[in-house]
Length: 236
Image (tube, rainbow, N blue to C red; front, side, top):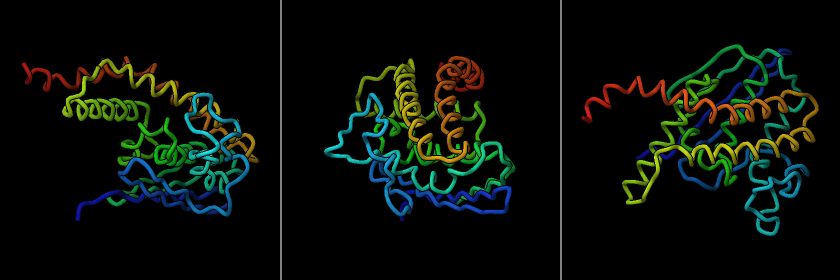
């Protein structure tokens, strides 16, 4: 039977010995992300609470923010964690296990990024292929390569369908501009929901990443072009 998705398990051991484990289903379908188990939708997850200025949803049809609902269980578990607290992180997928010692904000930020990419927020939908091939604690270079490759492959699929596409990456820049606005609005929700700074700094870190990827893109493309000399020469 054809495989339709995968399961990613995050296991975070805090400094005091407390262990938190979360399973994230990464399905290939673009909608219908199920929120992880949480007792009830918190008040800060209502759509109208710090709603993004460019949000296309309305409270009449979507009373809750899909991104907030997706992240609510994470907030409930890690809202009291200090950002620079050392943690042991183990991430398991169906094909590999990644482990290491890092800070709480990096571990939470990595998990938060995966949950954001698998939410039903219209402005994070473009990240879903990244979630399907999730790479925990990736470096800036690795993230940039995956972002550029994901976008280029998406354009290639659209070109095969007969669509006119532009490979100047302007669409990717616009996607990240919208993501910056999402992160900015969501940081206000996080401030209202978290007791300590672990989750707050995690969203700040993701916001910084959203800002850095576009500015890093030009340099990344130049570096990547050198790596693809064989492909370029073969096409001549």
